[in-house]
Length: 87
Image 1 (tube, rainbow, N blue to C red):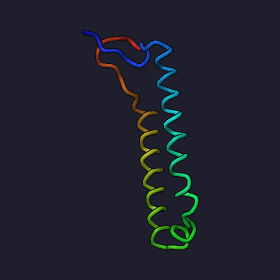
Image 2: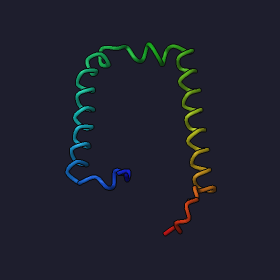
Image 3: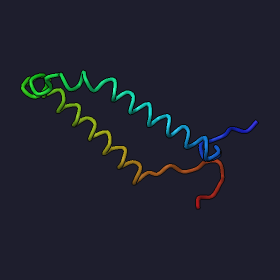
Image 4: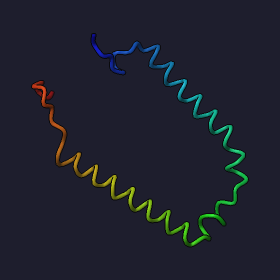
């Protein structure tokens, strides 16, 4: 039994899956947008010093993690171990 990857799927199924994902995203935004719009974001997150500090720390952690991933991808790329030579 062979396993199928996304590159082996027929194009029609690929387009169907992409369209389902797009419609699901649009539906989610449609359902959530009224709640997002009526929230007082500036008062809740920007004027609140504790919340602002937590957001800044999360952004710094994200940038550090992304930077470390990019560094290791650039300088220590993944090598195949199954004997297939790279292109």
